[in-house]
Length: 207
Image (cartoon, rainbow, N blue to C red):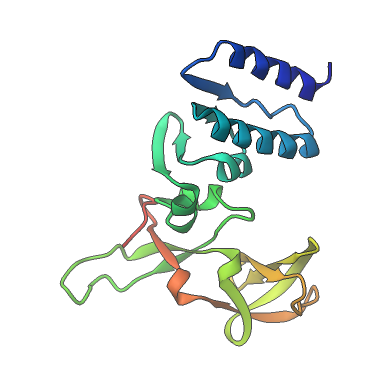
């Protein structure tokens, strides 16, 4: 039997027992990309039809984002964040989650803040600033950078840029949008509403 057929046989055996819940540990890891996508769709449909709880363990964030109602992210046995895929993508609890969820991941750079807030509160002086690739535009008034790589995926392009200080940024552009050539100087314009900040010492997200 092929890998996909063996996976289906194993799933059928579990279904026959009619359990109250299923525990699936990396069930798609040995499948090729096409079969993995097909099986993801089948499992989601099966879950909706049976109405059973499925605990699905995976290291593949695409599987987690496309299949889960809720995601729990663990690192070395420690729970980092629990939420819906949309909540975790839009509001990562810490730097690890920000860099792990998303393909390509969130851009992160070191930064600094004025320690005192208007209300008398205090924020860390050193922070990590994060922004998703789709929340950065290219314009005439922004952070100067050099395009060092362009990946065309048909419906979109991923432009890798190098900023002063050897920091890099990935920008996601619509496939029909004009894009820079490698070596060209560009100006990055992050959407201020989508910029997030993390404590540089703890990695935790700041309000």
